Amino acid sequence: PSEVPIRQALEASVTLHGLLQRMRLSESRLQRLLAIIPKGLHKQIKAGPADEENWTILVASPAVAAKVRQILPTLTTAVAQQEKRTVLIRVKVTH
Image (tube, rainbow, N blue to C red):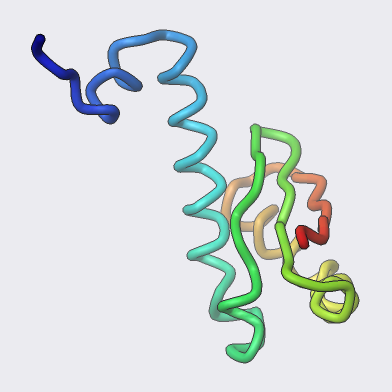
């Protein structure tokens, strides 16, 4: 049987295409903000769920979460300037 590459399947399905778009949005936000986030935290942060109004940053530990929360106002302002809208950013610890 022929196999469909996952990227092609995601693009072909309306529902899955929406998921792919949200994944791209989340990754794009994180990549744009890495310049603001201290370099020592980069490997401990991942892009989480996102939509037009909300975004979750996934972090490796409570200590990293505390550091990210300290710069959350700066991150929120940067996203608002880049996207011309307010986005609620949450920080979630993943163990």
